[in-house]
Image (cartoon, rainbow, N blue to C red; front, side, top):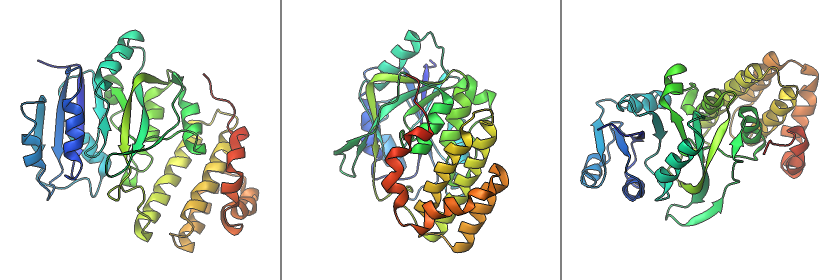
Amino acid sequence: MTHRLAIVIPAYKATFLPAALDSIAMQTCKDFTLYVGDDCSPEPITDIVEQYRDKIDIVYQRFDTNLGGKDLVAQWERCIAMSQDEPYIWLFSDDDVMDPNCVKELFYQIENTDRSYDVYHFNVDIINECGAFERRKPDYPAVLPAYCFYRGKSSGRFSAFVVETVFSRKVYEQYGGFMKYDLAWGSDVATWVVFSGRKGICTVPGARVRWRQSSQNITPDYSCQIAERKLRAELAFLNWAFRYFAKEPDIYATNRAFFILLIHRNRRFVSKESIKKAFTSFFAVHGRKGDWPLIYLFAFLVDGIYYRIRKRFYWLYGEFEK
């Protein structure tokens, strides 16, 4: 029997995997198959998965080579390729958890919207390593247009964590998979922009995903090597977005603000040469080189000024459609 939803976990870390699988096993609607792709992990992924064979419809595969360490997006796609012809795909993770009614509410919203959307979204809570609630991220509106999503993510008004998004297999195959950036940094945001197209992102009310903030996340890793790779990836994403949204009248202002944040956030962790290359790359695509001193001032010379005025930057992005 083929279910309507493929939940896909590219697995490598074992620490929180039982919690993730517990949350999937507790779903009130079982109309899904769980696919676990073991990225040649040195941790006991197999043993953990076996404990859930009688609780979840699971397809498990251990790959002979580690791919995620070199190309995370390729690992995502390798795991999705394990799935069958389920019309919807949920790329989940080995350390986050979902509310027990997530699948039920997802299908209700899909039916309630007459399957009109290719991207559905769950609102997010942040939990800590122990699974305790930390904070609630801002909820998305009922429908979020692609450009409003991009502006909101760029300005810090909205967050995006891969695991809160479900997409149709049709749109996934139409665009040949995910947008590809190093470390998958920005790949999810760019992909949701493309996948949602003119329709926008539809929020699933009544259920939430709980994203785990832990020392095992790549997010807080600002070693020089990782920071420089992230910076290059985000610049590639920023330049892509400028071209993709070229018809939007405020795309330059939006990206300028994002670039200020990007440089400010990375300037202590990367080399001066990397900062120089970042400025060169930004202006090569965006033009307006006369803004170089202003951006340098806000992002680099006056320590912390961006963060002190950032809350007032909402006027750069306009009002979001409700």
